[in-house]
Length: 110
Image 1 (tube, rainbow, N blue to C red):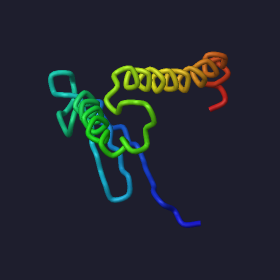
Image 2 (image 1 turned 135 degrees about the horizontal axis):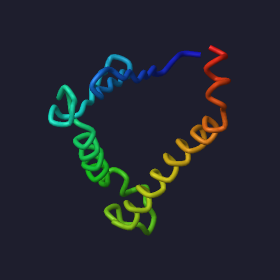
Image 3 (image 1 turned 30 degrees about the horizontal axis):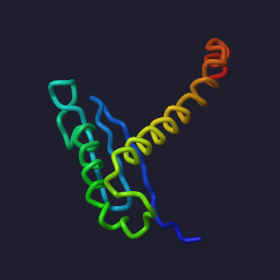
């Protein structure tokens, strides 16, 4: 089976995060005023870019929608809430599992 894509995520010092997807590299970092090294766009700039891209793609998806306006604010809000809820649940499940482990037993096993 041929590999279509390979993505890796690397965190470095000063809150910098590098995302490598094939031959494309993206480094996101906090501004220098917040303790970062100001290398690449900040997370807020990436969020605004994603929002802009989603609004820009509405012309493309207009043909796929049925009885929903592409710029419907309720739909945008519902999708944002749904994705946020899924992300929180995806974080809570491993976090709850990690809180059940006795730290002394975990440290002794290493």
